Length: 134
Image (cartoon, rainbow, N blue to C red; front, side):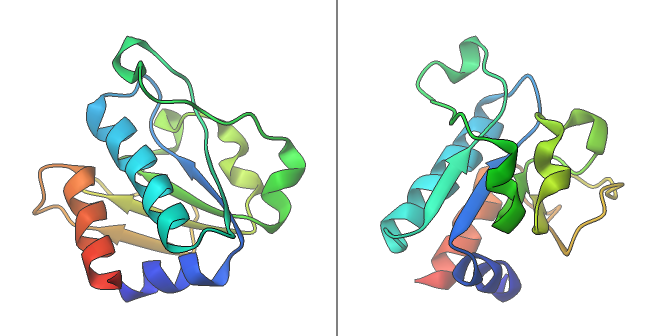
């Protein structure tokens, strides 16, 4: 958990991905993490990317260029399987971490994989990390 916080502290540009066809856990963990980082570090640039559907009616995704990834930390939430990640540009990231609660292993090459399968949602996992940081 401390490693996740250290990655966040280290980077000025952060891009948060989640799975395609998002449910409320994917949207909530993605947008919740984005807003928490911005509240703690107002000078960081934090983006949320991915497809939208009717489950995400209150969420807004950011439109960013491929070049934004060159110096960015990408955080993938609520998914650890490559074919389910919304927006393949996560592969362009300078560094990549995954935060997930599912039991399956990851097939994504990443710098850090934070998996807490005892939680029923990615949102719970994000809250645990944020509580540790405060």
